[in-house]
Image (tube, rainbow, N blue to C red; front, top):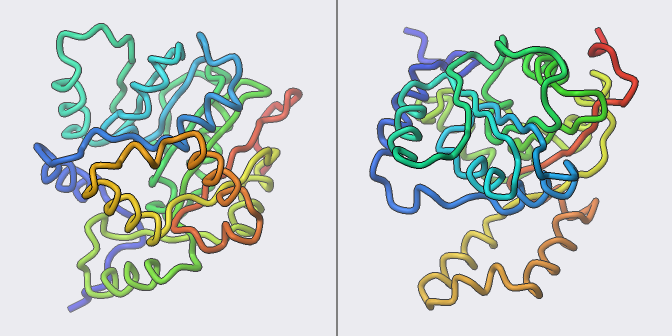
Length: 259
């Protein structure tokens, strides 16, 4: 009997994951670094058309909508979409929600100023297919942000051990080195404009400790934010973070992704 997981996550995996998430504590926190990066690079954010691929809980979309962006969320999990719609029921969020496959985005070419995804690209055997679709729906000069796992961490080893015995929740995922990720997006015609490391085991421990001490807001102080930015943007230290965040631009004169 072959127990090896398929080389791609299935829709069924994500329906199960989001079903387990319902009612979970801390479900509605958002990744501040991702929101900050989009607001910084997709200026002006007011009335910018923003698409999230695999929007899941919708936390970042809600933050971007509050900042003035015109937001659209795409996901192929019906459970995730239902959870989001129940969460915002009675609110006029103005967020358009679409159930679709990220490999075949049912939206017109050049529709968005910014497209982003977090924890999505790594679950597909052929990530280029997703990136080509994101390139297509971006306006010339628009930005793309993607967040993926960093290959060079002990956590990656742990995940692959679980995958080898079919115990990793999403079913399957790959990881990227900083160089591999840069080459991937640039091969398709994007221009890299920023590269960050994000999250680490030590940061997770610090966040938990501050939360236990009732000092959770310390992580978001101006001094802590400045320190975090310096560390995350260091070209050497980013090799040691759990995740990588790349921000790239579709050239202003672009026509289509490179073959």
